[in-house]
Length: 226
Image 1 (cartoon, rainbow, N blue to C red):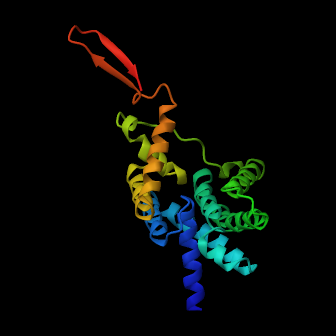
Image 2 (image 1 turned 135 degrees about the vertical axis):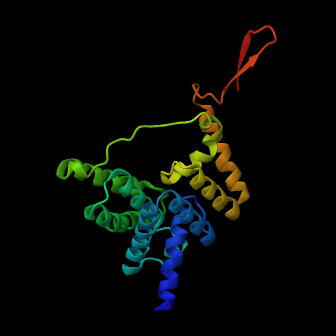
Image 3 (image 1 turned 120 degrees about the vertical axis):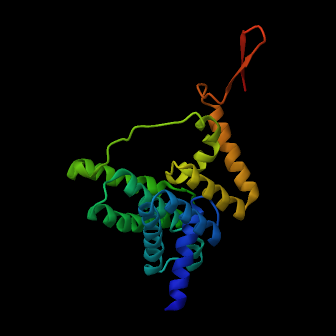
C-alpha cells in the first residue's frame, strides 16, 4: 500500500514537471508551490487531475514505467487548471477535474501505443469538449472573459511571465517559481525557455520593449528596432 502511494505520488508530480518536458520530482514540487502562490484552488486542481490521469492509467494496467515518468499525467494536469480557468467553482467543475484528467490519460495512451508524439493534444481535446458541452447544457458555468491589465514593467518582464503562462498563470511570483523549477532540472532548458519567450515577444512589433527611443541633445528623437 505504501509503495503504491509512493509510486502514484511520483507519477503525479512527474506529470506536473512533464508539462515543462522535465522528469524531475523537485521540479514538479516547485511548480505546484508556484501555482499555489497564485491560487491554492488551482494548485489543488493541478494535483488532483494529474493524480487522476496516473491512477486511471494504473487501474487499466498501462506501462508502469511510463506512468511513473508522468507521461499519462501532464495533459491531465493541464485539464485541471483549465477547468478552474474557464468554469466557475462548482461541483460539476471539480467533477470534471477528475473525469477530464482520466479522459486525457486515455487519449494519451493512444499516442503512446502508436509511438506518435501528440504532446498536450489530449488536454486540448478534452477541454474543447467540456467547453462545448457547457455552452450547450450549462452556459452559466462558463466564466466570462476578464479584463486584461498591464503595467509599464511588463515590457521587460514578459519573458518570465511567458513561462508562467505555460500553465495559465499570470503572476510574476509564480513565473519565478516556474523558472527556478526549470533551472534546478536543467539550466540549459531554463535559459532556452526565457530565450524563446523573449523571441516570441520580439515578433510583436507594437511591444514597447522593442522600440527604443534615443533622445538627442537637440531634442530630436530616433527610433531603433531590435
